[in-house]
Length: 502
Image (tube, rainbow, N blue to C red):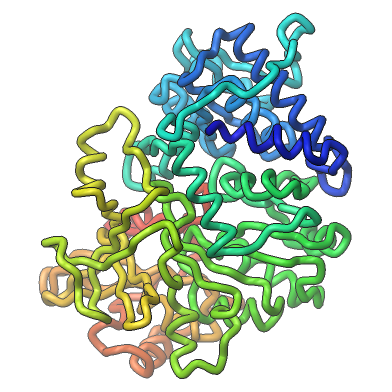
């Protein structure tokens, strides 16, 4: 089923319900939202001859129009190719060309001229609105099958060219339904605030709120601003949002200065990167019972595991710290295992690669059967993430398989070292990588951003590590930085850190 049908149904049921906001300003009701999507779908069909199954890319900053464009693409039966607006024009051009997009929607970006093939039209709705003849709205969304492509998501490409993850209508349906069961209920009076890029996880969470007829709010800044959110949330009320751990850390620092304690926020779903134990303990102490964790990846969008609000707040269970440091238990629509290289299950507590199977798992990689065969084997998605399961089914992430450090023939998981260092009061951020060693094969190096003006002594950090983890895991060197390199989704670029060492 076409996801645009969800929008149409909600618009018919509650046409006057407020739908799209820019900050606190109402932009469109659900009737207006659906009508705009229908007109954009008609425009794509009339001017650009977009047919069902074609791809249409979106290289725009967050705005209410972004959501109208997405649903316009689905309205005419095409597949959306959202591109992070922070990417370089050449990176965006690669994605548009690789996906075979017929149209690329932009918002004031003229740097793409000459970078795209002639078959891909660039269109800015603000500067070139559709004519009346082109926007005779489509009466109904184009019928689509469960296995048809709906969202072509390109991986962040931290280790090479990004790959296109093919997400079907059925994949998006499963992700949406699992949210209601495993993550959070959604209310008509909720306000989904999109402070993270709509091209990524935040945008995927639009479906639940369209189904329930909730408000969709783009902050006036168009992105994440901690002070803006602290002021906006109490005025909106019932705010729900997706946030990367780095966003929560920045919001927490601002909240401590202003005294903000989460007023107006109902739920913050966090994921998309490592949330360290010390950080989530501090966040819950400041904001209270507002957090739910999800673990997923583009290949199984937002739907591998979840850690419930109750688990995040539990301080009574004898192993509550272990659970809080985990990513929770398998969501209802997937099976999750931890396996060795032979594909056999690892014993409880032992580390292996995380694999998953179920309705949300991608159809495959776009035009890349070799990568698809490598990632999906016998119906199981090999995630590339390392982890362990406890006897109760709670999954704890260790690291990406490529980030594991092998020193003296022993595996060292950077996240464990990072967790230890982050409990030192002088450490604000840390990322641990391995560097070649003629004696040990690899040795541990920690890149650190200090929390104050003075950097802690290496001997002090050494002693701190020895008090928490085995001596062989402690860093052999500490490199102090003013900031860690990150990609457009807030993930630390460990490849960049390794290249600095090289």
